[in-house]
Image (tube, rainbow, N blue to C red; front, side, top):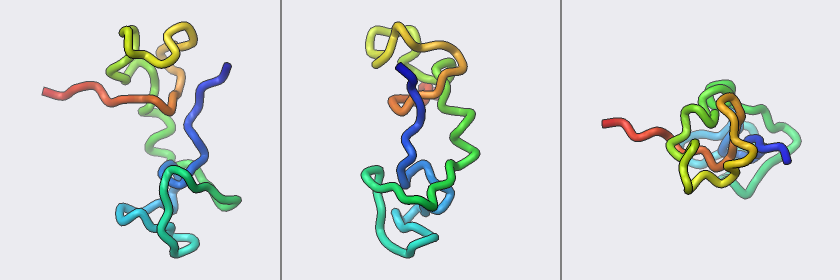
Length: 81
């Protein structure tokens, strides 16, 4: 089973901080996607298992499939002190 980021509005370059789509000028959420979807470059490389706080732990959603450079929609940032 492949694990990848969802092609939804929250991962799109057109998603703005006020939950508005810059392309269509409507409110959107993670439940939405469209044919104009373009993945944000900044999240493509940071949401890897090796940077996830769950990697290698009992709360990892996909422990048998997880590997250091795999991307996952259940990614959680590592705690920063």
